[in-house]
Length: 135
Length: 383
Image (cartoon, rainbow over the protein chains, first blue to last red):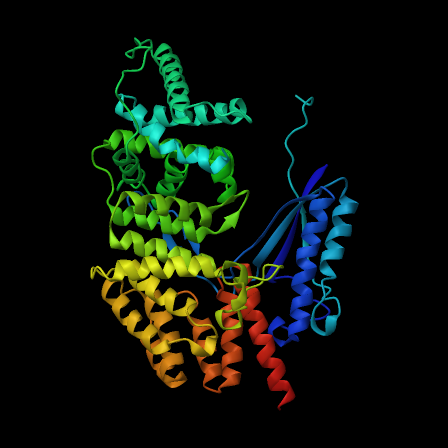
């Protein structure tokens, strides 16, 4: 088994095919989308492949150490930041192919007009713990 | 005896150990140990004196823990094997335990965790599941909290305001894992109200009962939010409402108003309306004005703006909203609602979309997004 992170972006991903902001969808289309997302997570739980799923607020801030005895320096949020993560799902699957297959299914979540959004999702493999017998 | 009844004995048993001279942190571990043994040992057959059984087993567990501790530190065991006579559970001890767990030196999250374990008798695993953190993290939080209490001295416990704030935090956390924190908070507040005759504690209990009475109607099967105006009032628990109103009225009659009583009065006015149209908004605004005297917070002012909008019309509500801090959570949601009520649908739709973006949780985000979509669809049809 190998773990993969499926990343969804507010900003920074290539534009999806069905690119209509959600508040412009019909209410029943919003409902259908939310149902799809819930069902997807539930299906992965029942197949034993779900690890975690979280959504992030779009509001973030940059922080760094600012020297001994000083409070941390903060900056932003920057409107021009290219990459803005919206949330993630962690899956534990048998193969890379399975991870790609699931990300493809998730990207088919229905959007405006009930049509798939074709949203680009980023798939990132976890760096695994070292195998038991290599050292 | 079910889990809850068993857990009701926990604070009494713990108090006895502490009164016999056991240090708080070790005694608390010992009581947990006894609780776990009771769950497996009792089965269908209860001992004649469950509290006595727990005290005996907990005391032995305490001695074992102290001995192994002492061995590690190469110290002598300072306690007799036979428990000293005379220490029997008393109500004052349980009360003292509440105050101890709300010690002024504890952070909110630590006080919450310690209260649930030492007073509520929940296991570390249950508390961890309820707050969605790893069990090891919760175990550390609890043991650090116990060390803080032991170090700071058990003689300077927190005040009743802190105890109430801790219980309200537990109540608001809601439900995840196999423990219903709202029900647990009500149980602990009920117990506190029986121990301490303070109208604010009764106000807090009434507030919890009145909120809890509406629980079934607040969300749909799929977890989506149902706004107060749209709730199916036939699903409200009339028994809890009657009890909550009785407790609130009895507390208010004592003429020592406080924050929780004022909030309970507002909740009672909502619960008392058979239909949303029959809500007494004028009186609700008056109670918000009272509440401001005790807790002048942006959140109270925000909620007051909604009530003013209902009592005196949307323009008055918007005027009240204009005085509310710009950064208070859910401000856009209230603004959207009031602007829609005022007939400015395009602005309202934009604000609902912003409210969705800024929502503090997914259920609210989805709810606000549906509002935005609903208004935008309406606007499209009428363009």
